[in-house]
Image (cartoon, rainbow, N blue to C red; front, side, top):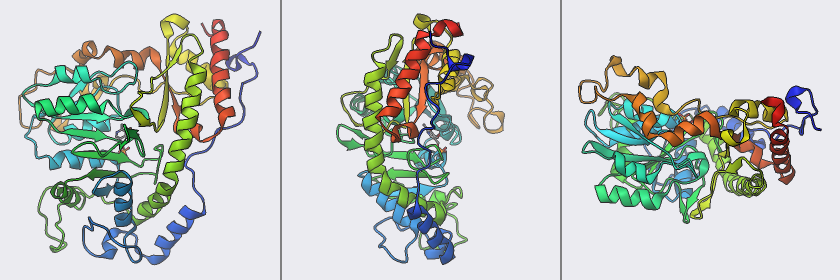
Length: 427
Ligand SMILES: Cc1ncc(COP(=O)(O)O)c(C=O)c1O
């Protein structure tokens, strides 16, 4: 009988998977060019916003990148910023909502999807996810709409677009805008339409783990020119194009992206298409292998997902059926050489920040009593799928694993099979 590596047996795999980030002389040359130019920030190219089509040459790398990324995703305007939490914040600020208004947000996502709401003195209302895709569940969205709801945020979780058919229909029925948190969804598609292009605005992240990266960074995409100009101003501390440097027109942030980041991202964007297709091929292949194993089910790929980004590959571990607690299963898998991870410790509303309402000045939301009665712990009853995903079910694999080859996928499936077959060793 095989011995699990966690108990001293021979691991299925000792070879590392493909490293992330992927880069070469292209990024190196681009960085050196910026370095030697001495123009390290966008203001070196003149004041303010070049929202539309700057040409090659003596142009800001950030401005060029904004246009290239927006173009690729079928949007008119791109506003680059320091990170993806920042682009969510400025987009929501530009919606001009009233203190205490509500925005619907999935319960199973990164904290930035909700802090962007709170940073604007608005109230995140958490909604459960679909058990097959882990994307926001449209049926639950409809139930959560109140007379204070002002927007629905979807997160294209793990690189699979949310059900935009149903979300858009619900939003239209209630006269609400949709926001796409596309931090996981560079180059992804829903029925042939690019993620990030199906809403009032979308937000992408270029943080180190993301499918395109400059270490940190973000971009907001929109088709609305006035909205874009407003967002651009907020990245520049409230400045306005064509007006003096020390003149401020609205409350903003300094969320500017550096020229170094812009240069790296232009190079990363050139790799995106090929990498998306590569991850997609291997991610789909791994699903065919894992489907065969009792107690394991990959998330379902919706037929309308025409491009899956596999930023996070997720499969469901049936803890009640298999036996050992999820974390023990994951520890055993890691020992076999597979970089598996359990994902979020708990759904967002269970974080101490929400349970204790540690928000701006301790108040919630600042200056209102409206929502004193919200008890975030109570969302657990409404979000059983998110609870289960965190506690017993979700197993994550990182995107870089899917830049390798089929043999890598065979090894992962073999490691899962081995742990399942030897589960008695970790009971
Ligand atoms: C779903 C989601 N939204 C937003 C963000 C925020 O991006 P950033 O880390 O660039 O602020 C992340 C980053 O991890 C994310 O996963």
